Length: 175
Image 1 (spheres, rainbow, N blue to C red):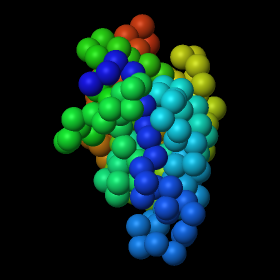
Image 2: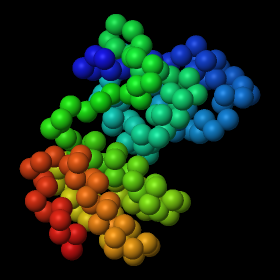
Image 3: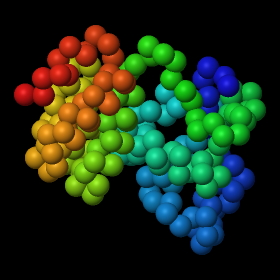
Image 4: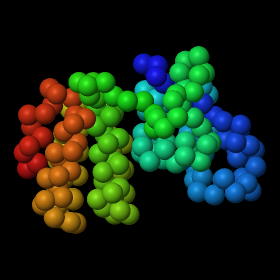
């Protein structure tokens, strides 16, 4: 797989954009549709990241589009990635605020189900290193309040794998 995988619209994806009555269009909400429109086979996931964040999408939304064959992963030449690959892999040690934020949003959806809207809205303000840790602490507090302390601690432990290393020291103290 190329170091910089890109997303391509498939023929089926183009057809669904033209005709919303197709069965494959079921579940294609406004945010997913907007992303599908933006996918052009030229921009990498990193380049699409700010738009994906602004749309409030998470990893499952991208996978939803790929699973329904509306878009696919490929390299810069247009060659598809190997079958069974779910998208780009993160090299060891390559951590980012955007990656940590997307992973946290994914976990929030799983841990809080439909009760994560305020935290998703607050995530829009996370645009720099200095914003990430306070938001993650607030997420942990909300998870503990709506669920258990154990789930909040599990959330923080899991998100640590994506947090840039220079930010890891304060994450253990959600207070």
